[in-house]
Image (cartoon, rainbow, N blue to C red):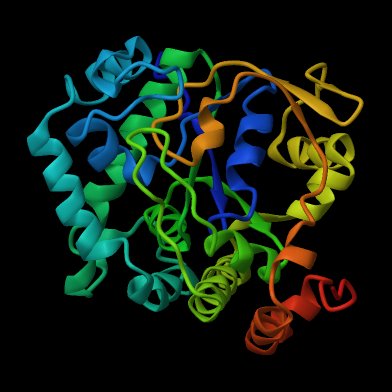
Length: 320
C-alpha cells in the first residue's frame, strides 16, 4: 500500500464580491472537516508581502498556522515566491484567458498542459502546482480533508480545473441591485482603515454578468458546480447548508446554528472582507435595506443591464 496521503479536496467559492461569499465560507468553516483559507488569490500581496492580519488577528508572518503551511508547502514564505506567483497570475489567471481555458476543458485535455499550444498558458502548470501544494499543506496543518478557497474569481476556478485539480465550485449569486448598492457604499478596510474599492451601478452590473456567466460556462464544461443564492442562505440557512454539505460529500453537523443565528469560531483566513475577523454569535437575517436605500434610477439601470440572468436566478419577481 502507498503511504502517499490523498490530495486535500478543494471547495472554491466563486461569485462577485459583496454577494455573501465570505459569510458562506465562515459558515462552512464551522462544519467539521472543512478548513476556510480566505481569498488565496490575494494571499501573496496582502499576506506574504504586506504582512496584513490573518483572521486570527495576528500578522500573517506571525500566524502559527500560516507559518506551518508555508514551511510544508514551500520551505517557508519568501518575497521571491510571492512576486513569482503575481507574475504568473498576470499571465494566466485573467478573465480574458477563460475562453482558452474553457476550450481546454471542452477538448478533454484538462491536466495535459505540456501539449497545449497556447503561449499565454505556459505558466499555468507552475501556477496551479503552487496552489495545489498550498491547499495540501493547509489541509494537513488544519487536520481537515477539505479546504475552502473563497477567491471568488472565475478565472482562478478555470485555471484549477483546466490544470486537473478536482475542485468543487460553489457559485454564490445575489440580487445584482443589492450587490450594486453594496459596492457603492463607503466601507473601511479593518487592516488599515483605508476605504475599500467602490464601483458605480453600471460597472457593478458588468462585473456581475461577467463573473456569473463565466461560472455558468464552467458548469457546462463538466466541472462540479453548485449554485447557492445569498437570499436562500439567509432565509433557510440550515436547509441550504445541509444540501450544500451533502453535495460536497460530508455528513452535515450544524450545532453552531440556532434560531437564525450562528456561532463563529476564530478562522485562519488570509484575506477577505471584514467579516473574516468576526468571532461569536451573529444574526442570519436577510439584508434588504437596499430596497429603500438604493435609488429607483439605479435599480432600474441594474435591472436593464442584467435582466437575463436576473430572470434565470429568480430575481425579476423580487421587485423593489
